[in-house]
Image (cartoon, rainbow over all chains, first blue to last red; front, side):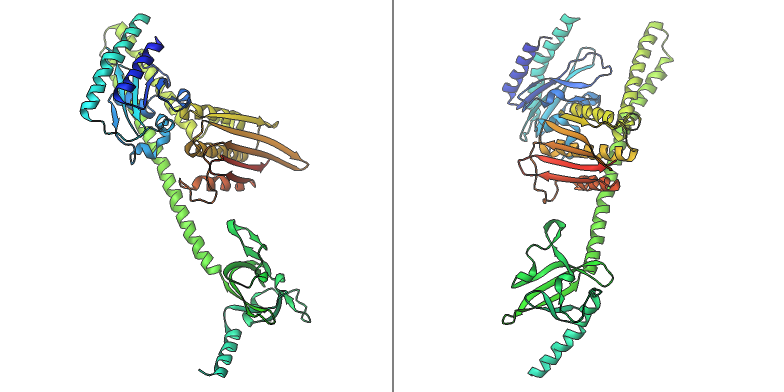
Length: 153
Length: 343
């Protein structure tokens, strides 16, 4: 995978939509037995995210992967997640208060990876905003990853 | 009200009061005491030809943090009101009293020292405290059950259902190649499920603690902490003896686990130091442990952010095997949990 170009795309998403943090998990095509790790992170507070490795079904990426749906949280205050922040380590280490976590699908309807975009204060993500982000990701990041995977196959 | 009446009333009060009243001179000798005081206090080594000294009875004042000490002794003060003092009683026990000490005759430097039993109030307080504690423990137990139940439901039940459905469909697959493909998928699902269940059981209590001992169990746990929270643990293990009494191993493991959880939750650090050290001093054979971080820290007297059960549990566990735990912390100066356990 061309890591530099993926990082450029993630930075671009961060700047375009004004996120504090944009992180992407390791891309895997077949959902075999593995720990989900964060492979890229733009705007991090430290290196802690590199050490995190979650079991399937755990944490933010686990939840998104399990349901196949985006999570849109405008403020974690008062949610189950805030009470249980320990089970969502990326939210704690990066001190995120609001975020969008989005599954990235391949053409066989499998989740290849999870994209996390968040802010360190509460932020009302509107429906229109979310759609814009989603379309942007669809056109740039997803296409890029699919192309890379094809080249490597 | 005339003068003689007040004197007789005062005298009656002195003799019949259920409050202990003692008159004490400047050097602490008891000039007079009322019947209740004489009946309550221990007078076994009392030589009747001499003045009794108050320090024969007094065991010290209650200080901040639960210590009993003689610093700032009331004898050297003009007046202190409502302080807690410990006296030795006739039954040979040391009992807390709520006391007042006032100089009433400045010329002869005589003071009045009155004492009221605290046992009743303390008992109610203790019951209240016990009640609150029990409530918190029950709540914590319920939360833990909720967590395990969710883990079982979300993970195990769902995955099992998945495999079950896949298996059902296998019956209708005629094509051998396709069947193989589907079986490989089911196999994968089952092996994932196996891992999931294993993980739940290790989180509850690692089998390595019983099979391989404290060092192996801690190392595995630290690896898990690193993956789960992104926090690295620097571990120094300076112990020759490989295995200990299982009780001691469990206590050590749980104390270290709890201290690390606390650091990970509240200290805002990305690394924690843990050290275990063996000390042999003749018959005294101890294991010393230190869990230290350089994070936010806290005032040791403050109300805890969490339930407060963690620290309580650590000291309860340690004392169950005759050990001790202490916590040192300064806001901005990190936290150190340390102690020792006899082995």
